[in-house]
Length: 461
Image (tube, rainbow, N blue to C red; front, side, top):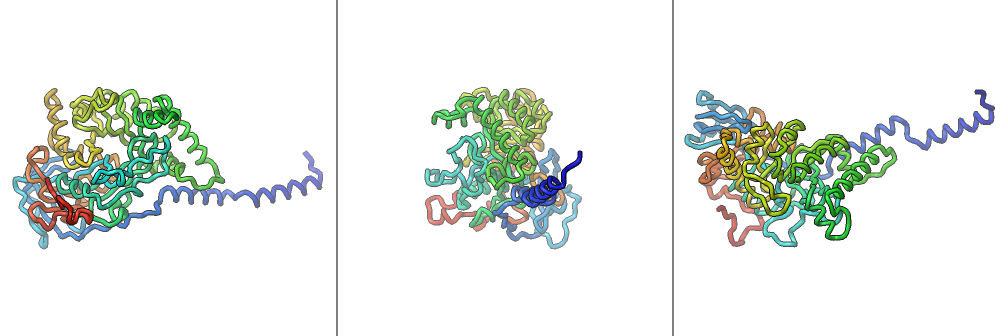
């Protein structure tokens, strides 16, 4: 087709105008990269630095490595914050190591809680300190749990001294379908939350299904007030996020940045969900929208769909026997964890409690005993993974902690007996090779600033 000269001039000018008005392909690519960097990076970076430690050898203990392995009369070496070697009695202790006789005692990786609200719902439990739920909209992916964490919460020190907890994931509460971003912390004293942030740990998006969102917002006369309303709001929000991701002229939007981070695989999903049928629907919704669930939390009916969870590589974070406090928690059974383990599912014992986090080892032992009563006898070494390696996996930090393997962070607990005994307590706890608690040394008993001079200062039950 021939084009008149005048029209060619006009179209040429138009093309030039459009070229000037629109970003080039390279500019668009740079903008996308910049937006992605904004999602992946954080303006509140970790300033955590390990406390000083010394080369240490634990000799003669029963070692559970967190991945199902057991070494009797074992030796564990760590130095410069890292695990150097794990072996038997023939493993030589290098010169310069502090040698600790651990005969008759047990060694495990540091305990990890994949579901905590410490710092966001701290002690004392008063309204002035309750900052764990932004219950003003059904979806608040724009809020970050770390902006509510109060580092002086005495719950952190109780979790360390009573429970051997070395890392934890603090999640927003479950009032909302999309509650916001999690933060993963090292359980160390710090004046700031940045000083506790686990270096390089990925964020997670806390989601919730079931009764909580529909009760909170239905009671306000707004959507969602039903389970179908829950899914409708979720699906539309994901569709809006996908549209945002494709918008090359977009302005930054904090909520959609979180959701796009999930769709890109940079942010994990931790989904509060109780009923088996509802978890199956969430799995389909995740496939429809193009994301993956890392773990279902409070999954009291997970035992009914163990095959589905295994097939989709989704962990089940459960309690030992906490159930019946609402309708969707009614059909729980204490054999849940054991049945899931038998089906090959990644099992996690989580707390969701400032008290429960102090006894995750005992909760795991209860779940083990319930399994044994129906003929499922899970070895102690495998049960230990429920509160060490498996939560680390769901949190995206299993390549750095959660098990006693050479090169990993020296997060270690020396127990004064079998950790699956109700009579056992942490004797010593190391975080990145630094001795953070020693039951035999009162000077190693951590006390937060808030507790100084208060009744029960540094109390250890």
